[in-house]
Amino acid sequence: MAEYIGQIPEEVDRLADEFEVKAGELEDLKSAITAKLGGTTWTGPDRDRFQADWEGSLSQNITQLVQQLRGAGQHAAANAQEQRDASA
Image 1 (cartoon, helix red, strand yellow):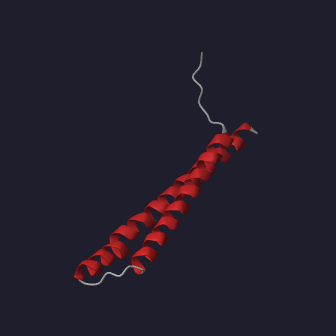
Image 2 (spheres, rainbow, N blue to C red):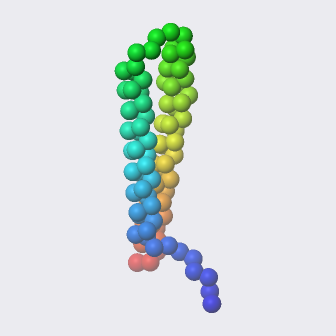
């Protein structure tokens, strides 16, 4: 029996959608943390360092992850469409 190679495009579409959903959730989380940090009563050098870290590398890492998730979702969606086109 031959090995199955291919996909069910609707399943891959749902996967692509999930990447987008999770990317949006990460953006919401980043916004919520930024707002919470802005609303804290915390002053001094520890706060300054923490805020610099958050606004710098930590926040940038989340932004990069969001972009990577969206890119993966777009790639999956394109693959699903290619499967539809090949099967047509």
